[in-house]
Image (cartoon, rainbow, N blue to C red; front, side, top):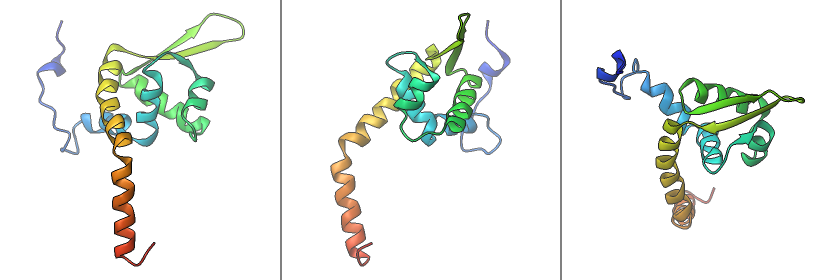
Length: 128
């Protein structure tokens, strides 16, 4: 059954459009890395924190809440003692992450060019 929002036109360039906040969640520093880390397998919070090097516990928690709210990540609490919570991508999250990984791989593959460009830029401006 289609929802009322299925027929709406969304425009990320409009400040009122809800797609803008989702784009920010996906492309922000921690959102993109979190989605990428979850692409291969579901992870527990601390496993995810170790995988996304440099993220604080608070930022990872906020990021996961935002991605869960957007329907990209599923939080699954296991009824065991001690408590266990796993995070995994939803089908929508998988689709978004596949596109994001294309960008990540492109950037990683072209870092030699980026570093050369930075060096030329810095040299032209008196060496930063």
